[in-house]
Length: 371
Image (cartoon, rainbow, N blue to C red; front, side):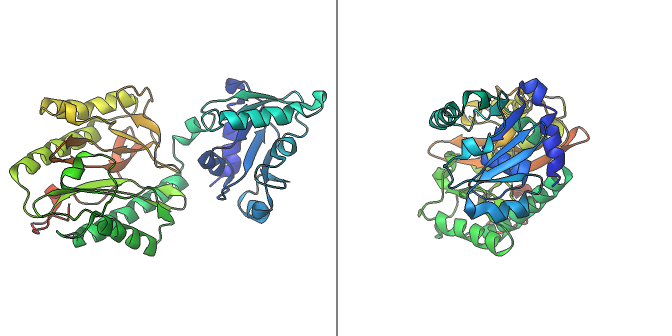
């Protein structure tokens, strides 16, 4: 990743943000701007330099991962950071990330600045979305990492779904996902795997439990992996046995909504307009009250980032955005169906990166697990 270019892009935003420097404390923003993969540290970018403050656990790591940053050595993760990293910035307007900095943390920084000599004090000001807006458009190296993560997630799904059968617990199927992913190059999972069998499928964020899977029911499988720091997100809904008429009907509605959204979403649309494409399909089929979440979200270093597909989203879609398209229908007492692809906007249109097959593409195996 070209972190020097990212620093330049951030500096180009300083006038619009009305700052002369930015403290970066959000972990994923810190990694994006510096390359640092550790768990403790603060990055500072000014108009002329870049600094990274951390304790002795990470001094060598900063030297390896952050060549564009000068190391500021501090005694501990929360000891003396403010005074050390803000040295020499008298009168400078230093932006902070209001979405990450807690009230307590801000009070700590403010107190530390107040203890500096009056002539040496910078001014802290909120700088919302200073880096988040830059991160929405993915660079080629990011797209490569995201693609590798998606494809590993796809194969982890295939591995687990082909082995899922009645009597296995949801947790056992989730373990198959994790086992395969970690043995084949994933750093970790990008979130706790959702395996929602039968009636649990009506709960969009159900987590795998010790409940056994039952024949003649659907199973929602939502999973993701991390490769080189970047996340994947995939959902498929399988059926244990031959799908019955009700399941087939609901599945067809969701698949139609997803297909139409992926075909019709284009650059220049807002996230709200994108969401409406799928929502209208589901509403016309009589299930408006059974689709309550947004159609999708951005994916990158974080599993959920901008842009968002949701009724209130004003994000304008552009080439380089990596997003999920994941409509669903959730019927309490019966179950649910969700189908999710991870896509990239290219030449004004969405291209699905996900390759895991769906039910209509699967063979006639009795399990239906190739979905």
